Image (cartoon, rainbow, N blue to C red; front, side):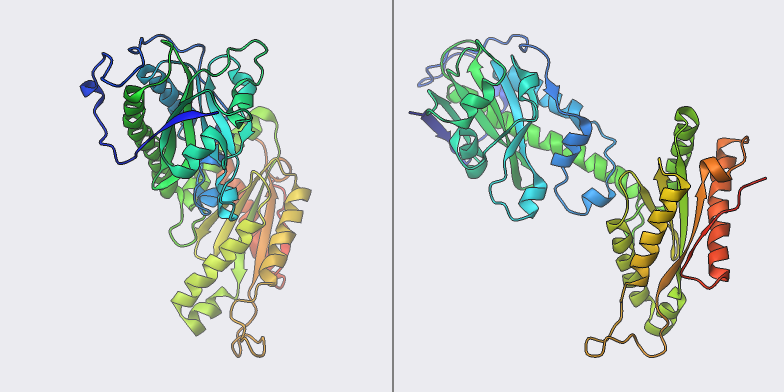
Length: 408
């Protein structure tokens, strides 16, 4: 059976320097002997890490993860080992998408690990509603234990890939907190100096838990701060400044890798009537709704930006002109089907209000742009070709897609 000690979250946190290095009265563990971590700290890929830190729905639509959270997680585990030297340890996080879907106990996934068998443990999942790990996750309190109950998920989890591993003789863990939400667990197993984990180890890890929370939060704040510089304040889409930077990057990639690249220039039809008839607040709301509809239909790896006013640009890395035209038609149809101001009784738009639509111009870097010129010239030329095609769609009756003419 599990023998455990639950550490109250109301206990006063002690500074590391104030914790005596000798055995405290009632603490049966031997002093910590700091040694190197058994092997490197490993993490899942940066893209996978980002998925576990998307704690709000809008972040998945707007945040580009340039801050390397994998480095932050490695530092956290390395410091945890310095605080409480152990044979192995790891960080498990819940899936925020499952929590948004109403799952009170989503499974926890190991995203960082050290010690023997780390590679085999990365990406593995355990229940969050039972066992040693589940108790920490559900209660929000640190715990230490030995002789885990038979069937505890942690036993099979830590032994994965270890044919002759020493069984868990002791384990200690603390909750991982981001903001005010418990999102995972950090655990350590088999105290390196031998014997069970003691009260002093718990105090050290509780102190460390505060640092860990601050470290993660600072990394997320840096990500959000960088993202805000790229976002349009009204729609939450990328702004034109970021679009130009990203377009230059994609052109450079297309040149070096021989990759496809297409671009769509989209302008709303009859949007001026909304501002004139219903006011600018209604116009702002309409732009946000259009942005939401467009974002929902973006293909993977695409970039959607508000270029200005009621103009939008879509970058389609890897897309041929045929694929770009299919995407353009999907977007055009979605806007044409959007009913923003219908009366609930008769499903009619305000009297005299023409339907909202969009005209789209499409251009391909490979097929329509003449070779040569600076990267800035090619960037402006590709935008210009799509923009000209969009105006051709306007001239031909609006609510349609036109393809650019190739440069001579």
